[in-house]
Length: 184
Image (cartoon, rainbow, N blue to C red):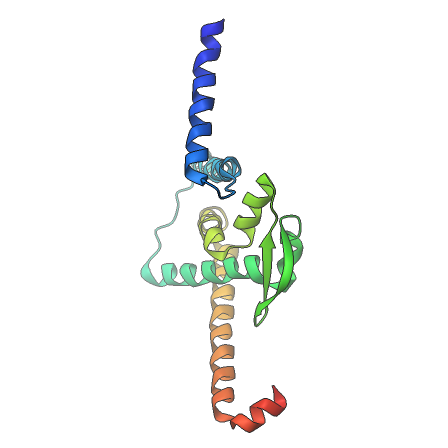
């Protein structure tokens, strides 16, 4: 009986040492990150299993479709992580700090363990991108028509955002400095 506890205790002690050495003086919620990774891998396994059971195969995407998917992944990830309208999704895990740019919020991640791990995930477009891309790829496999429509829509929105920034920059550059101070 005692020999059964020893390996688990040794593993727990080893993991505690690794976590302490990794984090040093910084607070890093490695256990929370582990659960987030586990959820991602469980979703990937679930997707693969569902595809196999239903006889669906993931589509082969050409360069054009991959480009659309890349741009849509960028835009959706950024919207989920920074957009004021999606802030209710982040409220349990972040604190509002201010505005960070046009139509983007600056939020700080809450301090405690799992809230911190999820807060980093939902407030970071780089962290969300693999989740969004995986979801879109699963969508292409199970619901190709609606997923393609969403990908095209968000690609167009990303292009529109780029044009909004280009227009604003051009307008600022063509406005004399003395007028910029009066209006801005």
